[in-house]
Length: 135
Image (cartoon, rainbow, N blue to C red):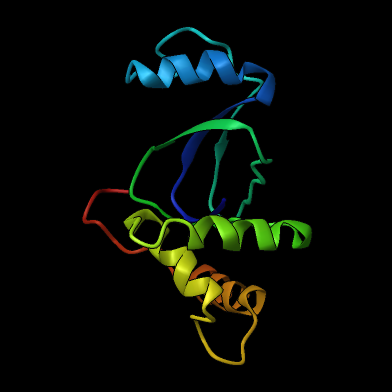
């Protein structure tokens, strides 16, 4: 999670809390609402990045107008499993972005990491958009 503009409050729970967090989410609540202490809690500020490891539950609250960039990674050894999962659900709209990515979408001839780096550089070089609020 890369924070370009603004701040976000981030809380994370390790995979060992999976069953507890799953029950919380089924009730439509949050870990914070249920008093489950996170293993990590901090403010992510402009220019900072946070890696959220696989299997970690997380809750993120935007504290003010913000722009963030997220990127999900798949290990090379899991690529065929991901492709098979997407192929098995051709009508699932939630997988549309993955279908496009696996089909070679994006900017032809430009690898994904270069695309993300270019967007981050352009956004971090610009000033935050004025909202009309007093500084």
